[in-house]
Length: 373
Image (cartoon, rainbow, N blue to C red; front, side, top):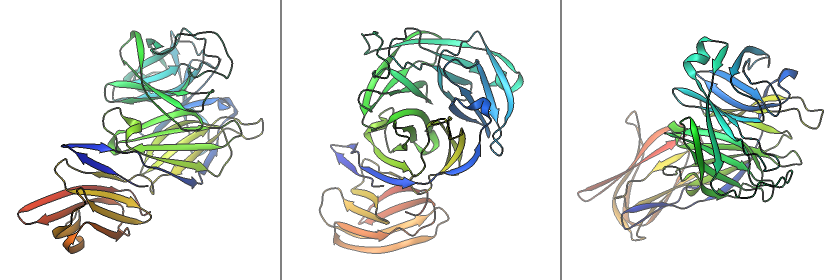
């Protein structure tokens, strides 16, 4: 995955750099037949929860990641499962997206909000309603599987919810910003990205500033996208990486499992492939570089090497070091009017400081390395 950062008049502009890789998921377990229509996935302090979609019960299910059985069932009161498609959370609430819209005609789209403390203590919980319409939808004529206003992906980031559309027409996705407060709201359109698949799940890893989207095509091809090094809600303005699964399935939900691993659930597919819980090892794809606005350096990670380039293209003199958090100097090189340097990426995963001392000036760049490339 390559990182390209450009400083112009004091601002950092993050230029998207696309890459794609094949990835083989690990099968953790098949899921109980009661979860044939599993749709969303969430990790609540190590507990993995899911729900079913169109016409299922208004219930949340905690699942056993070893045998795929349901450990606990929680009924959500004052809620209907018209088409629950994804689930998200913040520190206080769980958000359930009732916004499946296969023909683009729904006018009763909503997100149910459930207290996390209630969910932890009771098998019957009440829900608030966040009702919404899309800011850019004016036509509600039904057109089954030919609409760009279906939605199956939801995540929470800072003080807003973000919805990612499932575009049947052009296989792109649109991101919308939505209030977390109960009431009637407009989901504001922000941007579009060409994912070339049908997006079915989203997960924000705030600690790594990384967004995960997963989805499939109608032939059973499955994909997971990683978006990183973005600012604010500009998810598509940083770097992106497309992971192409080597397994045919119908991925529906995704959540972060910790340790650079994600869980992905799939529903019963083609009548023969059972609903399944997978894990994805993302350790080779989650690296970030923070470049301060006064830095003369551009930093890339690409093709198993670190590439450092001066912003101006002019050569620099000075002492360049890469230092681990424990103080170990991993590399020490004297630059003599150099504008480009390549370093093999053989460091263990961790956080490193790239430091350039040039005359009386010291410039530092922080690098988060999730694994060897």
